[in-house]
Amino acid sequence: MNLAEQIEISCLMEATARKVGNVHPGASFEDLCYDDFVSAAAAIAEPLAASQHVGLGRSVLNAIEQTHRESRSNVNLGIALLIAPLAAVALDQPEGIADVLSQTTIEDAEHVYAAIRLARPGGMGQVKSQDVHDRPTISLRDAMALAADRDRIAEQYSTNYAYVERLALPWLLDNWNWCHQLGSVIRQIDTLAGLPGLVPWEASVIRLQLKLLADGPDSLVVRKCGSTVAKELQERAAAVVRTDWPAHLEGWNALHRFDEWLRGDGHRRNPGTTADLIAATLLIAIRYDVIEPPTRDEVLQHAARIRQAPTEKPHHD
Image (cartoon, rainbow, N blue to C red; front, side, top):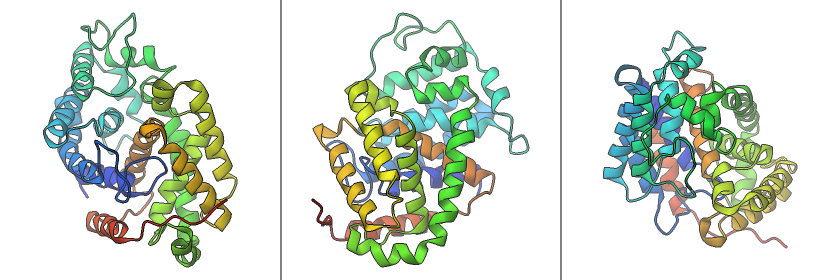
């Protein structure tokens, strides 16, 4: 696969896995459905793959402009912000993310601010310094650093993707190997438990999401719902992680209860930032050949099977 194909498959895998609280082939929001994510994955692949040549900020803006033509909602701003720097790193320089981020400019910030205004992400307030409605006077990385304490995506810019590379990526690899070894057990229990047709790569993505949510509050949820709700989300995720899902039926019941809670309150508890981090983690793993992903056709065929599957949830107390 070339870089654009790797970006697209990373986005498709993230969107297709039946992660709790998120849109997927079996779950939509009032203003957003799985097909929006499929279209958006195709829309951003080429613009972000050109990041090394057109500039980081310009590639983000191009990606969001193209997405805006395809979807009525903000589908992938966070993904674009996370993937553009990763795509700008030359393949023979896997440690080059620090150099890419250190070379960002005021012009990069201007383009990213324009992309943010176009996408209009939820929960955005105004800040005193370098607000996205003003013209930036510092580099993109420096502007992101100002938001690093309240936004996990901005944090990656100021820490050279430390969270993604040192925690999320190892967790993905551990889950990937574990779920593929557990494949036959998953196939025996999945229909009974309410996620018929679950496959190892999908289970790996869901386990990664649960681990990330248990590790720290999702910053989108913090912005939209406040720290108390975000903390409860973290605690509920940790409770599911302790069940060692999907190996035991107890874990499936806990997973479904958690999913139902996240989808309450008009989907305001949707952990969208964590989903963006998962897409970036998948890209790193795919680009540096540490996992063997499904093909695009395999992912879309899996999505079609999910749509055709019964929607009943398992009984739980």
